Length: 246
Image 1 (tube, rainbow, N blue to C red):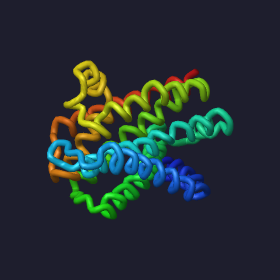
Image 2 (cartoon, rainbow, N blue to C red):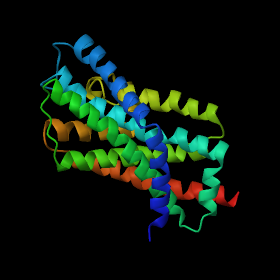
Image 3 (cartoon, one colour):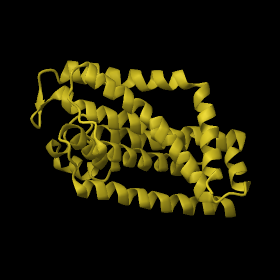
Image 4 (cartoon, one colour):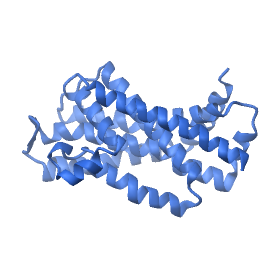
């Protein structure tokens, strides 16, 4: 039975419905500003890896904006946990704990799909040729699953909103700019490459970009993202068990 998954997921969807247009606006404006500043500004008439810069940029904007929304569930869970004690109610409910993880992860995936669709529409409007295929679907789902799980874990390990802000500042923001979303990792300085290849966003960006522009993916990148997901699932289970026994 998956009643717990459905219950957690529906609760989050009801909350999302109440501020749906705010999510739409935030998912629309941020990538649009990056597209205008980098695509039509700094990168105008530039070529990267055989593509004009705007074509190269669109997949990067998809990974960046979808990651922000998927990982952003961490803030919502953080608030629910500290102020409304919702997570405590989940723990007391007669459902397996993996269903809590699954419900929140599904919610993160749902939120992440909103900017994905919006940026794809931007791409078609400006004439970028994107291959929307099964490989892209697999890549984006793995990408969103990984960052939804990461957001869930961060929400449970931070002690306050200040800690949450620190994670965003010292981990999420550098990851956005160093993971190949705006510029190829292979062309970065050597010491930056070493940092970039630590970040999971580097591999999911490669997956999504290659699936959209080339219609193919690198299996090693796929396996790396899948391995990250397995590790995050394990950590989620351990953290929930720790919270439950404290």
